[in-house]
Length: 477
Image 1: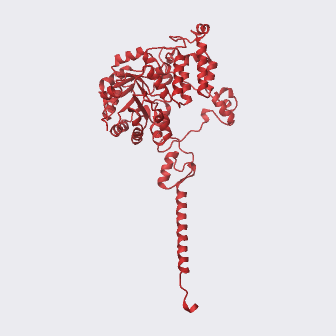
Image 2 (image 1 turned 60 degrees about the vertical axis):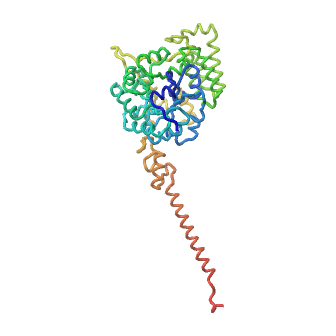
Image 3 (image 1 turned 30 degrees about the vertical axis):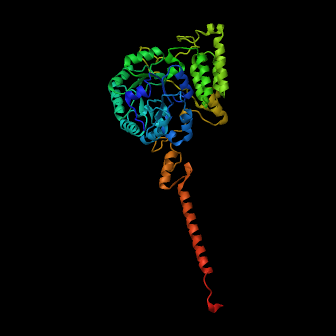
């Protein structure tokens, strides 16, 4: 067994001193996109975040998300998992370790789905659990374990957090300089000061994440923080040539990506569509008819044709001149790859900054019953299939949580658990749960009854055999 490299030796040798890193992005950092990014300067890529529990139990999930994407050009590669159970995490790592150069534990996802699933940044206060997860993985698997984190508001707490992970066995740390509340419209600016503090406090390589839109940002970040590498997510999605320091025409990147997709199937169509929406983001603000078309097409050929139509429109000289200034605030014409900058938080009358909040459209009872034009197209389709469906948020059922794992429990579960937990408990206690269709008790009783019937039948046969074999007394002959 080869010696497992650690820390800086791992970064210099296995990761080849990678400085330009493509972030793990759910449904977006798939093989085709990673290969495109590598062609244009990326030196290290991460897989999309994978769910450790699903990875362990589902062979198809492993094949679709890792085993089926093996490619010699796609190295070095780090596989990222989200998990909240040390044993499950280690099992997933053992199944993945032969297909990548390291395993990363996601401790940075701030989305609501991570809160519901209890993973990502929502584990950052559970140091004892995280220490156990990282330590166990470092002991059991053959490749290094790395972590991606977000910062705390307090710099000292962030430093202690990083040191705890290092002590547990983390060999490389990626620090996103935003807190768990900095997301969506309230994303704000990442703190490079926190990243610098972590870099100075640990003795393992550190990657920085946040505020990266151009190659000049990468160079400035490395100079200010002293990190070994810089990771890009949003910037990379809008401009895959970011690490080359180039801003090519969008159609060049789109066509090259579609070419890679055709060479390395299968690639889920929704991934391709999402990438084209990101690449063509600024242009689609003008050509809204093609935006609608891009959302509707059902195959790769259709997506390719819409991208071709966008290219043709952008290449017509008179249209280019007319449209050049139509998207306000862009440093380049809209057909050039460039970052998307989120709007600044709104300021109130006295000049203080107010956190931007995205409000959902209010939906009245009348809207939910009749006025279909107030609904999104997706909801209108659902309402057409089920006219009695109610979209009023106030009238949606409130789900009661499972007593063990926090997922929604079965409405009529006899144990007040979700199906997974109910199945384990019913099996252990040999019980039934009609709500979840579990019949362990019924089956056990049936098997017992069958064994008793079989025993009685065998006993009767033996008794009959003795009677048939008994000699007739001589006096009766």
